[in-house]
Image: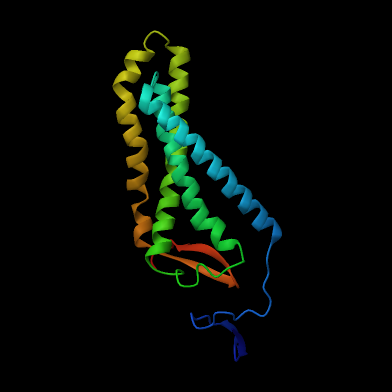
Length: 192
């Protein structure tokens, strides 16, 4: 609800103002792209399940497969965090995030999205190193990666978890822009 009193336009939104926006803006592109995102994510999860089942029966033949499996596992979590942190809040068709705007939920989503995207970046670097060493040192590749695959995979996950720990201590929220449309916001400014 907006009021123009005194110095300027002020906005107050409370949980009691459920339908406080006169017009509901539904973006057909956002809904279409989000539906495609969900369908592709579901297909990815099905493919992941088949890969996981095959590796559970046969094991991993190469170190690249081990690293790749860790990264596709992270991709599933990245998909879920992006779905709940970016896609669902911006659909504009329901007030799913009305009661979840502040508190633990936005903080968990912010931390999870930050960690999984960082794991994705470090993992891409690890795969590039793995492929580079297989080309440059084909005779030493097996011996080298036999020792470093497990520690590198653990480091690719643990380092982003530690580097992103500050996300747990900053204020995260979903800002309500219109009915059913929320954007994630994190206050990371220093000294506030």
